[in-house]
Length: 159
Image (tube, rainbow, N blue to C red):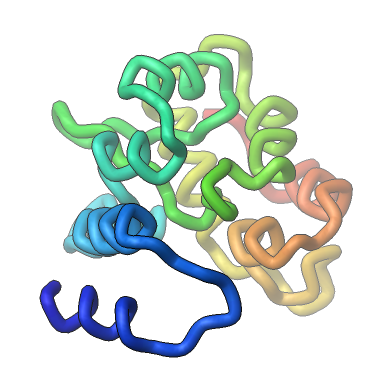
């Protein structure tokens, strides 16, 4: 991680990144998980401390966001994992929150959260409204939320 810190500190960049930003970036990257098993199915994730730092809110704020379906969290064992595709610039992508609230029931089960995360990570068909992109990629790249919801009507069922 020292080389990452050095690269971030020394590279020319269009926007100023201060030491606190570098610390947040390093912490977030360090927490990315691509372990075998369940996590691969939902894409790269970060853990609660890194997400709280990235968003600038408390762990309790993260928990509240998950309960309110503003943040997608998947519990694996006793550890919460948050798919990184939902992250924007120090916030959860607004389209992601809209998708979560539209597709998840008011009190989703752990299996329903995991199912949504796995569904969003899978690539769509070329002839779908997402034109071959995964819902996660579509959301991350700023595609229209309506297209994701249209695709979901045909391919995702709350389990």
